[in-house]
Length: 195
Image (cartoon, rainbow, N blue to C red; front, side, top):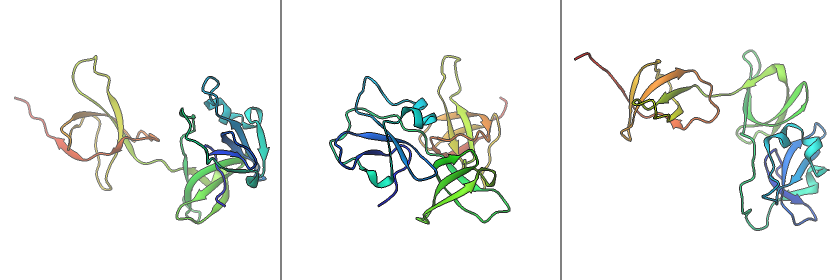
């Protein structure tokens, strides 16, 4: 059985109501809260204090993956954070499963290598290189987004870019460490000349 992680929709092994996993303790105990009430939704605060907001704390095998009807509303789940080991340590990377206490984190390793516990000082967030752009024009146009770049490519603040879909952007910031970029930018840099 694949272990449950934060954000999974589950039910009690002998239950019939959907729940969301808020946390996993250092002993592997799953902390989950009911998530079937649209008028009382699960919020970000639930994940910051799972011991307080959880309705049930049981071992991993006390829950099963939700197999009922699809939920009629979206349940808030936190963004998946990626971590990697710091330089000078054997390289590992993967998704954060939980903070087991103030000094360790559990990471689900890439390539199905299982789970591993790390001291928080031995890992850093694995965030892709991103840059921010905006659409040029009037001050009323506020569309902005973040992109990643292909390896070996760089941009600078003020660069004008033309995407393959025909949109023009101005680079407003580089190395933004954005966790949810739109995509890898594909297009061309525009060279401008005075007339």
